[in-house]
Length: 325
Image (tube, rainbow, N blue to C red; front, side):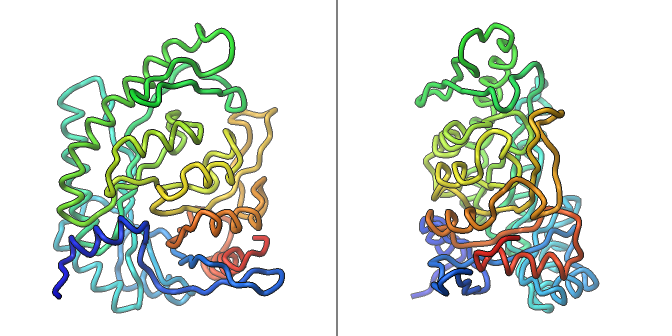
């Protein structure tokens, strides 16, 4: 039976599978194999010969691309170049959208831009696009003080801390407006994503939205669609909850993973700072076990500095094998 791209990708999305090269990781202790397979990737702007050669020589089988001002034909050529070097373009970083802009014309442009990014993702041969719907600002609780109470049906936030929420009334209103407009925008994107065979990976990345695991998971699941999942960064939200809690709560909604590290310090601004992988507050042995526990098979893309490509490659191998980074 002949299977077209759309049918194949739909089956993959339904199964929660992100295709890639096999990596049979074994646990550091006891030698037992993990049930899940992880595949390492780097981030790059474009897939030209020099970039692909550098990434492949460092031992990475995959790449996530970021350059958006390219044509569909250029994206197709990038795919061919990557394949020539034995690389898989597994994801495209669409990045920041502006779905909650107060100006209707600006919102329309942002949605149309996202549709084009989805087409570029398909042309690159990637299975998912990273999309940050929008951002809000204003007076918010400290990360450790958040306790979001929201309606599971409407996703409207009732409160963000225990006790007096009056100081955060504007933030709550902005959060609710952002949720409503983002849902409308993503609903419009779903038919395009389905037609192209591309999963929309929603990421809440320091945009002050959906900052606790139950709320973020509820937002993703509210679409009830195989083409909408979560793109989760292992280092971005430890300020709000342990990485293990995020992984368990998002579970099968996760389409892709980024990896970076964060050093918690509640006495400084932002409750800490980003550091090179292994120098922060994340227990990487524990995180690898939970990744296996939730059944995530797929790509883990480095979004961090502090090491050479080759050092990042070796670090990823250790992490995949259940060792400390």
